[in-house]
Image (cartoon, rainbow, N blue to C red; front, side, top):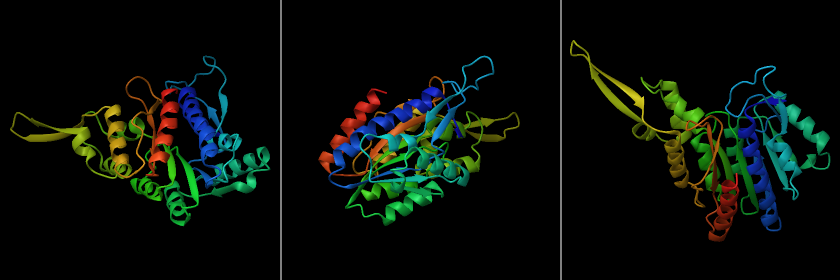
Length: 292
């Protein structure tokens, strides 16, 4: 069983996805072959072991851990089914547990499921390159626990012009915390942030250089953080708008953490440039986000 996260964080993002499953197959089932792609599928269930603020629940001081059905299980429980489900999970152990769980719970639908033990970036790019997008449409759920999703993967999804993407963008955990409040950014951290945003522009937007001089006249430059989690999210939305022709929702769901320094921003992007299609997708997703 997969262990992760806080009640509010995990439950809210799954509820958003549930609501979109209630719309998407109904709207498109008679027009295209529909695919649901879960890039970090896990085991099918999530054991909640933390409080909403992310602090460990201490024995005797908190309720017993809860078990939530994961995104894969919920997708298969949707009232109107997809024609195909693709579950991607890098861990062989987790994927085996997921396959066993879904086979037991949904024996009539297991033949519709494709299980990929692979890196999410590699698997998604392969799917994008080999699917006939004139006949297919898809909902893609990107639920990384860090900076796993590469910009090139988002570009591949955008180029299909046939997928709607829900992206758990790690604005706080993956970017804000990688940039020190004081001091120099580590090279590995800088590369990680550039890889997820597809550009080095963030260095000019999220940091400032401070110059100091000691008593001997030696000059030292240090780079320090100069951005909020909200500003990082807004920059990510602008970046995504540059590649997703169907647009990106300006509103998003804040998840995890405490106060202004939250962990994730749940973003919604549409690759289909068709006016009616994108307007409908934005209208539905906007309602879901505003009621989350």
